Image (cartoon, rainbow over all chains, first blue to last red; front, side, top):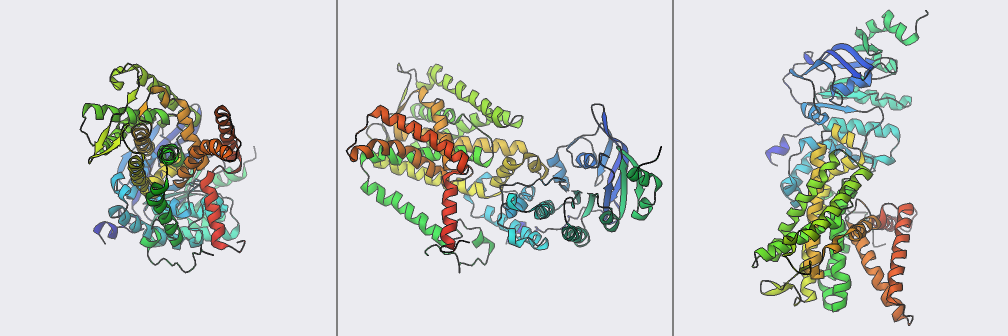
Length: 274
Length: 358
């Protein structure tokens, strides 16, 4: 075994930030599409090792917020500081290199590829061998492939999807696709994992499984998680702190219990009599 | 009964990543290689070499190049013939400027010229997709064929406007030109095609292949797992055009012996595209199956009825060929978009579990 393969392990990388300290700081971010204000002056922070929920009614700007964080949209105003480095405009593949991975509300897997290949694709960034070595296959390219395969198999074991390893993901039921997508995001070894409605469209049992995986990812691997979710039971049980958005504005921020009893939040969800 | 995978256990990832995890597949390939390297050359006639074996290999190689771009990376191209032309003209210029040059080296280098041209015409793929990209590659097709016609330096100011391959020797054996024997040319082409196929298999099953397939299946998600779309698309154009360029050089130097610009016009592009579609997009094996079908069909139509005592005129052969290929393409697009390669995959699956239905 060469030194390279020994260095491979599927845990959150040590980024020199102690648990509980600031991992990401979002300051006064505003995002507009023409005249539509998707996000207005939002600030919040994410601390290392926590599960941070972003909730709000439909159209509140939650997904836009995630898209800003991982570089898909560039905000007109405001700054995002991630791991001590401030940035504004960036491409999504740069965000991945900085350690931000995400899953999507509507599953965004590579449908023609097997579960194994999908998760392996998540490790593309971590693989280095160039076209020449790939062409020869035997030697460095194969060693690299095997080293990463080992890590991917650990993720497959962890998510209990061994039986669908070779199945093209297009043929899988929705719940399993969501799980494969989580696997692909984990394969990127992120320091911050963004989950966009990980439980959407799932039945109770699948939700329980997914909750278990999220908690284990957070506790065992120490991965910081920011998630959007509509199932309030799940949000209140899982998250350490909750930020609530409504019409692109932040209306509450704090521990689940405090947020639950916040009058503005109740109004936003239930409506107010005029 | 012969096709049983039971009892073939993998105890390491290396074994699982082998090219043929199933032993029977390796035997089958060994058998086909035995046919290709030993049995065919011993039994084939001059006609069989020139009309079947050599063109099948060259068309399969061109389709392999196109398949990497269209089947693996999902970028539609209609400029294949023009890129083949770039390879052929580059090889022609090199062998006439440096007359003593090793032909294998010249062909290997000529691929780089078509790769460069391919990348240049692949640049629009960063902005446009699908049909619009196909039109952009169509521009390459028209522009390059026009260039082959008008730029006299490319064909050394020949009065005919065509390029003519002279006798070229390698290790004392004539490999190209009017005096080359068909068997030597067959071995030359077979060697190059086998080598490139192995490289193509290795690239497509590793990191770069996954990157291309990811871009094909969902480019936004590919970007969000950290794949640089620009690198992925342009590398697909480069590798694809390289292989297509080599196929073009072989096409002229080891098969046709001469070429005029019109040879690299759109019908050739479509021919290669049909091979890739009928064979199966996103498959290496499919290119060979498709090439065998497309090349062998006219030969069968012209020789089989004659052998049965029902000679049909050659114009009729041409028409029949066009009609059958047209019908086949429509049939494949409707019934099995993944082509002949998928048929083989289904047959194989059934054989493994035979006689049980599942």
